[in-house]
Length: 267
Image (cartoon, rainbow, N blue to C red):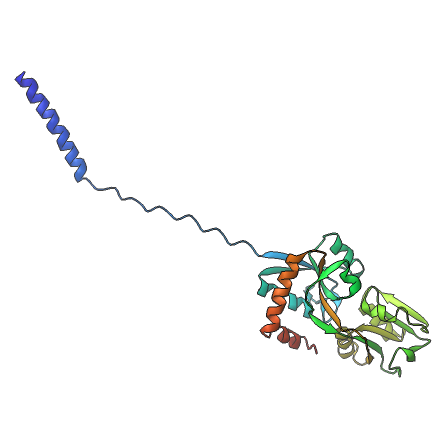
């Protein structure tokens, strides 16, 4: 009995000692809970712009096969200010509006004049700038208006407001239409036609650069309405219009727009 009692005491003592040693051991360091990883910022929206890149200085393909030009630079600056990515897709003018309606791209950035007829089937951004229609002739031509070209041939790019200016005018020998304005200018230089009507930036570019010694601006064709160009989108695409208008307002307010005009020698 006595021996049993001693054994119980020893067992109890051993237990107490073990607890004591455990209590004196190193305290396990607890790592602070890791904060959840921050969610990655969403990628900026990409807007695909269709452009007929055969319309210098507004939009054209350079020697490096890049789509460049005044309006391209404007949209890149707009994208930076409004927080989206701008991509450009070269699309021939004669199918550019059908492609927009079919959803092949988000918008058209191609010197599109804002007209009541077009507004019936698509929406437009705020105006980028105003343009005029100009009459371009050979350097030896004496005509200074459409009337003086009676009996002669005149050309313009099909489906443009330049073409609308001349399509119902009577007295021409012929009204020729072209898929690209550059082809019309080539025919003018060759003498196949005697005049071309084109948007003012394009007319100035061709008469001061590529064909400076061969063609000239004979007149600015007056209109009752101011002709503005803007970005066209599918009817109801309010999101893209809002982004473009936001960026456009920003670059006009901070002077970026004027710097781009100066860089491209735009009046």
